[in-house]
Length: 90
Image 1 (spheres, rainbow, N blue to C red):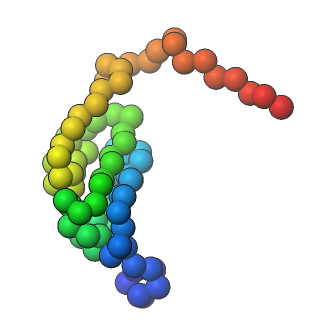
Image 2 (image 1 turned 180 degrees about the vertical axis):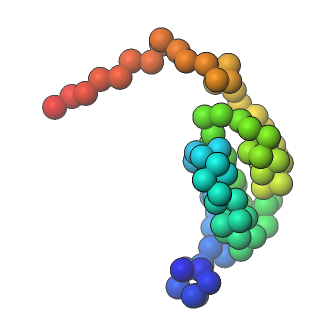
């Protein structure tokens, strides 16, 4: 859509990449890089990268895309927790 001129990301203020590890595993690195390159420069937008795992490729991507690299670890990497309760309400 961007190549056809139908979508522009030139005014993006927030770029959020969720499941970045999965995108890299599935081979979308080139597409993610193309989107990021067409966004405003990294200092004029806020970029957030979320990833359940943190492989080297995601770390490298974060260092390239982020203006101020902040790593927030919620749990130990590759760990599960019993503190999460999931409920379904009809």
